[in-house]
Image: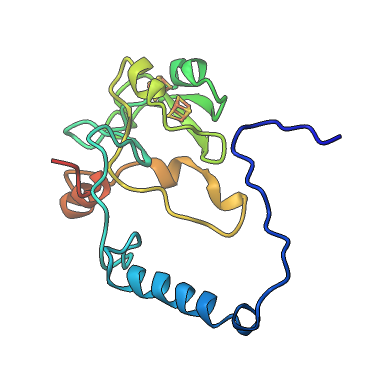
Length: 182
Ligand code: SF4
Ligand code: SF4
């Protein structure tokens, strides 16, 4: 006894094939007509990277560790971003600012090490929202592909934005630009 799970079952015609049917000519022509139809219809694919699709208005890209207007690191290694991260993707080590380092770090404590595991990150932006120092934000740069897992562990030197005072062009570039939806 056969069980019918849906009402979409179609009876199969099991009568022997005619000579014309056995030539498969009609089916070949039908297949070619479908191919031809798709040949002239609008393409679903694009020629990336020359062509790029517009990104959503709320697109969130690669993280950036920000500097202030004097070029000092903003992050004070408070750990709030790591605490807010639902994917537990952020780890850091804090260090105390020494005398003479005031031009490097804005606060008395700074992140000596800062890592984000992009394989864990879900680009939710909660780290950015949790940060009281405006030190981390998600840029408009698409996170690049990589061949190794190690390549997705972004260290502080990968995340820290170039100094806006000494490298204004590189700073601007690091902010990233994408083609947003209108
Ligand atoms: S964007 Fe979300 S998942 Fe990614 S590091 Fe920030 S808080 Fe974690
Ligand atoms: S990025 Fe912001 S929230 Fe995270 S440790 Fe630095 S200052 Fe704190």
